[in-house]
Amino acid sequence: MTETASITTAGASSTATSGPGSGEVTDAEFPVERGCPFSTPAEYEQIREHAPLAKVRLTTGREAWWIAGHELARAVLADRRFSSDRRRDNFPFVSTDPETRKQLQDQPISMLGMDGAEHAQARRALMGEFTVRRMAGLRPRIQQIVDQHIDEMLSSEQRSADLVEALSLPVPSLVICELLGVPYADHDFFQAHTGPLVRHNTPSQVRVRIQEELNTYLGGLIDRKVADPTDDLLSRQIAKQRAAGTFDRTSMVSMAFLLLIAGHETTANMISLGVVGLLQHPDQLAKIKEDPEKTPPAVEELLRYFSITDTVTARVATEDVQLGDTTINAGDGVVISGLAADHDPTVFTDPTRIDLERGARHHVAFGFGPHQCIGQTLARLELQIVFDTLFRRIPTLRLAAPLDDIPFKSDAIIYGAEELPVAW
Amino acid sequence: MRIEANTDVCIGAGQCVLTDPTVFDQHDDGIVMLVTKHPEGEAAQRARDAVQLCPSGALSLIEEPSEV
Ligand code: HEM
Ligand code: SF4
Image 1: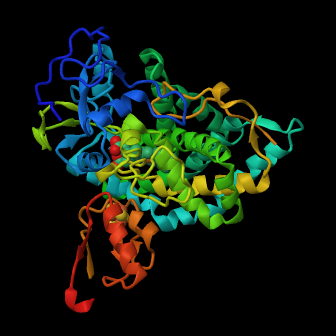
Image 2: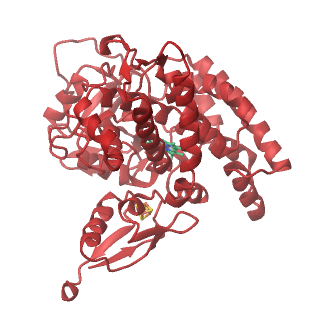
Image 3: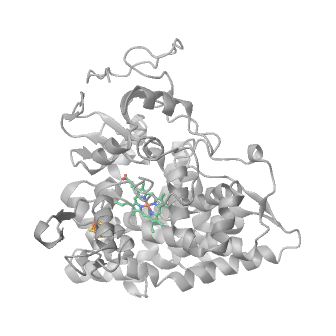
């Protein structure tokens, strides 16, 4: 570890290709493309070999600290001196374009971007909706949704489908929409609107327009639930806040928005990648088919292995923080790479191997610290039901294209597959 | 061995309940509730795991050698 905390203000991004220089371990700009799901980017390994943390250049022209080690990742994510507020200067990956920054300042922030007491309050208000017991109660309905979609797949004469469209996207979308209380008729609208939001390369004007359309819709939905409450999460949250005299339409919209985005694309991508991972390991898959008790640990391993939200866990230091030999200065951006942490060979033996019986749950695929995923129990349940049911009901399921031809989302904020041709 | 739960910092992630529901439960508001403070045998080992897994630092173990 040779870095010290002299963060050079990132001016023109260097075009030098002569290998690591000026205190940086790699010349690559982050995020780098992820490529194939069965390999981690070479740059990640380069940094790991160098140190558990290093300074990297971002595509925005700024710099940030890259945390590669598992122990350090958990420590930073649990450390309240690091802020989740995306409106702060230097928050990794947030555009430096003044227009975009202004828009960000004007938007109400959701729990994901709050810190300290403000975050605790927002999180506590919602936590009861995601208890292990409440989620277990959703099992029969999720099973039904999954069965209906597999029925539809099986009724097709071609004996083939795009799994993303047939199962991966609609299942979590329906589950989160029903949980929130979004009418069935509006699901297509949601699916069309959430996709572009989680891509790095969506132009910011498009992003802003989509966000506005969704916000307008959610505002209207919330108004309807104020007038006519139904039995769902949004109505319960509204009732609770109104009883306490704290109802605020704008923050309710941003909460609904967060849940919709966070609960939809993530799980969908894990379904697709999980199926690829399982199909590529037929011996291990056979064991799960025989014994459903093996599914929960398999889900943990797939979550660890793919760590799809990789660089979502980013922060800004609010004061100088000493991490080992390195000082992180107040105001520095920090990227806590989930993928790097979950492939740390000092914590996970042979990390590049999928071992469905590994049974390790201390991965950071759901983050760590106060922001650790509130929907993790729901996500686990959905994934378990989908994998169990899919391979039980379609035991001959196989990929209908070579791995190289499958369009993986190498540029997306949340990694996954664009399409997944399968046949049986 | 005794478990302590700091309900002020719990974030209701449910990792503990998932690890061993005979030791940990959640109130309706999501906050951790200890079913027992003194798990034994395998449950004690799982409780140790839960302390490691808990994302918020809400759980701690207090060794009470006299009881082991
Ligand atoms: C496999 C699926 C999922 C993955 C990999 C995932 C991953 C994550 C990660 C890494 C974080 C932490 C972000 C940070 O620390 O900055 C997070 C937070 C969050 N997730 Fe998930 N998530 C998944 C599914 C879900 C579902 C199904 C829901 C909702 C129903 C959800 C709702 C949320 C919310 C609201 C937060 C913010 C929590 C907070 O700030 O306190 N997620 N998720
Ligand atoms: S694992 Fe920790 S944060 Fe989560 S419910 Fe249990 S005590 Fe609370």
